[in-house]
Image: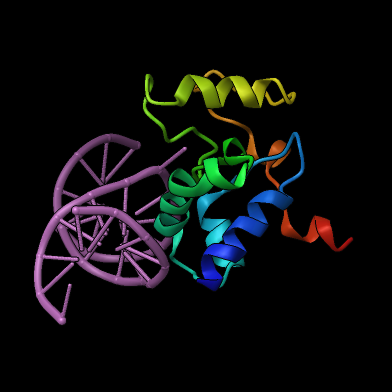
Length: 105
DNA sequence: CATATGACGATAT
DNA sequence: AATATCGCCATAT
């Protein structure tokens, strides 16, 4: 569907060293509350489309995956891009959060 | 076709 | 503030 394609497109457009949230992606893709769809799409197709799925975190800037089920991998990938985690294992979205407008400015 | 599910998020309690 | 519940809607079964 279009939504899926848009999500894929948006995820691919997240610049290295930045992160986006499920909710943001969903909104940008046309669904105000389709965050769950984004998550579903990512875990189901990220491998096929070679998406930078690790740049997608929840609204607090935390990794939603459970330790042992991808958490460590995602964290490692993010850190390898220069993203740092605070004491609460969260990313400072004020610093690393990606604004869609960045692609227009 | 009906029901379940989900890397979430916003509201209600 | 912390927890529980509902909404959202494309896929899976």
